[in-house]
Image (cartoon, rainbow, N blue to C red; front, side, top):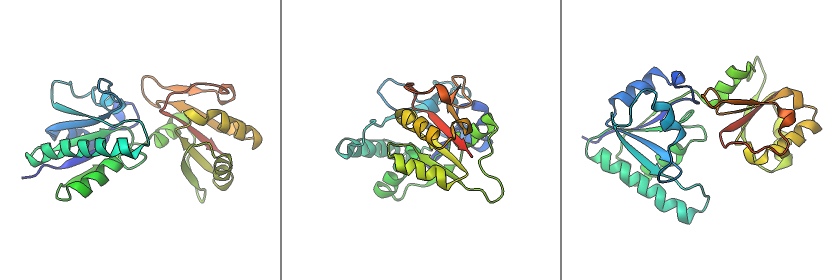
Length: 233
């Protein structure tokens, strides 16, 4: 029989925020797959599951996804990853692909799932949702994301000033993901809209490396990739 590919969200950083179902699927799986940036680097998701599974306890499959938007570079690597997973599935082994947060929210698993569906449509796929960093940040900061008729938006931060401004003006609460590269722009925008005191920024929320920043001191700051901003009007 063909094995099943499980896309498993392991939460935002604190291992205790992994769901019971995610833990069960990982325990039952024959192979744990994970994304890695470099050949030797350890992924954030893999660090989370290390709290429950020793590296030698279960076969692990590290899949290299280059940090580039060049499709000529990306496509061969995505196909290579899908082929590696299919080699396990076709041998009857279940594969659990772990990702931080939720598998269907700005996750590597989304594209992997589409590649698998295209190349190996016969492969069974199941998604196990996880606690997203947006939810974790709201809890950590005690900032309600939405109440009553309020609206909330999850926005990937980028350098389009007017688009970022429109998101803030249109919604009661905005969670900006991937703010590290445009933090100066966002701080400038918050000052313009007099929302600096309504914003909070956190890196690697709920993990042992969590940092909650003072937004007014972030001009020119160099932040890690896993940093988000919550603006609650």
